[in-house]
Length: 343
Length: 103
Image (cartoon, rainbow over all chains, first blue to last red; front, side, top):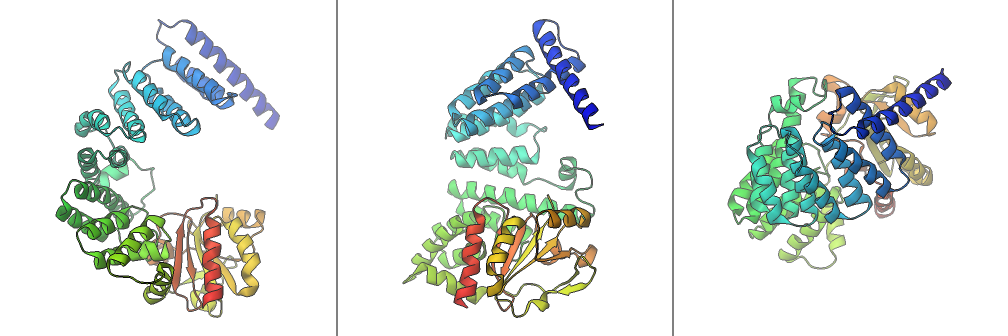
């Protein structure tokens, strides 16, 4: 059976290549959905098998020339941009690539997706004003989802386009249960409480970006309020990693506002227990502002001891169905408690 | 932290009092057993509970996996870690050594 499957796959891929050539050969006649699908499948396969990244890009360019403005356009462009910007480290060419394809696209979904990609490539080049111009028309686009919005906000933050960051982070922060369900796989949130947690987590994420934009626009009072709201929505993990930039952004804003003691409180969980280097850096600044003396490493160790909280007790079954208690660890010098899933 | 890398640390430091307990968050016990056998993991494994007994999200507030907490002799959380980037095990090893040496 395995051998037969292999043969069938080979034939299918040969047919796909034939289809690609056939469709490519008669450019004027629009491809049928089946032809287009086959051509796209062939491109994917040929691209993955390409000897060099450049050869792969050639295959992508040909596909985009032969089939401009199809449902595969954005996907092909995103992959090409990844290859150019990340694998080949040629971000300027990535930007030019998207710009060129964008100029030939009319379909609204394609125009939107390519504009989002264009924003990211401009961010990588630090071209804030241009990024703001490309992003502006997207602000009123109802087809943008949470990840598009927060992605644009963070691209804008990276390029220092603060007004754009504020606009899109504010839009992203309007996420609700209905919107989240629409962009999540079925069954991802089995109960209303799960859905609410998912919404709050994303809202906090967007608000962290919003607050950072406000702070950088000189509206630190508003920013501190925004950060406070974000924290209340997403004080989830008991210690350590926050998963968002909230502690770092909030800590920096508090420090700038002349409130270093509060900055320490905000930064402590991720800087002390998460080992996040950005948080540690800002904490060191806050510590120095407060007149910290001696070794910062010693201060960190002392604070960790002073602020440490006990791991919550629990009983769970092991794989032989015997109950196991956290308390049974007494005597171990150090224990790693790991939450995982098999990959 | 990737469990096969944790296994290496476990073998290195268990005689000095380092312990590992892994809670499988999705209750995919069959796949978990296979993974444990394939990777020859020798530390303790538990199943996450469901509903009110669910430890992962409700008690520890863990949103992403893998997430690990390093506990000291008194069962206090001294370090936490999310993800499995290569090289992270170095950082974890440093933290383990701090606990084995300093307390």
